[in-house]
Image (cartoon, rainbow, N blue to C red; front, side, top):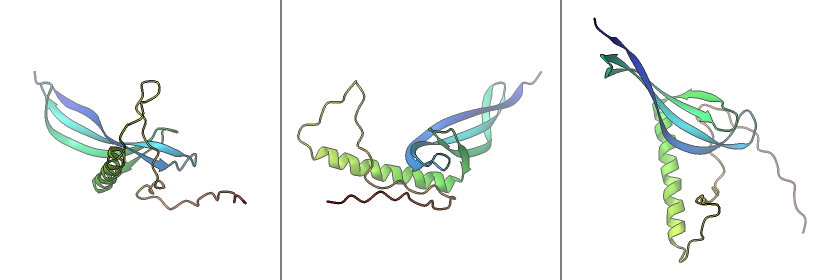
Length: 130
């Protein structure tokens, strides 16, 4: 008797901040890699399919993206983290975190557009008079 089948594993690659197309608010998007492998006697042998996905943490919307788009998103996130670490190293005394959670600075740059999506109109902020 030969036991064969397939097994799917999902690996979290990165988390980035984008504007949610459903709610119009900034939300964290998880970039994941889903690999389905052929198994023989419960041993994974070779991949049958590899899919990259971008999933909104706010509304749960998920969309398939290409490998190139996933690599580009991960590279841009790495550059932003490098800039933030460089800014944090300039401080002599880091501030302690509250509630046991590390404090992450809010990104100063506006969120990038999701690959394959049309640009959205930005909501105009009311002008403040001095």
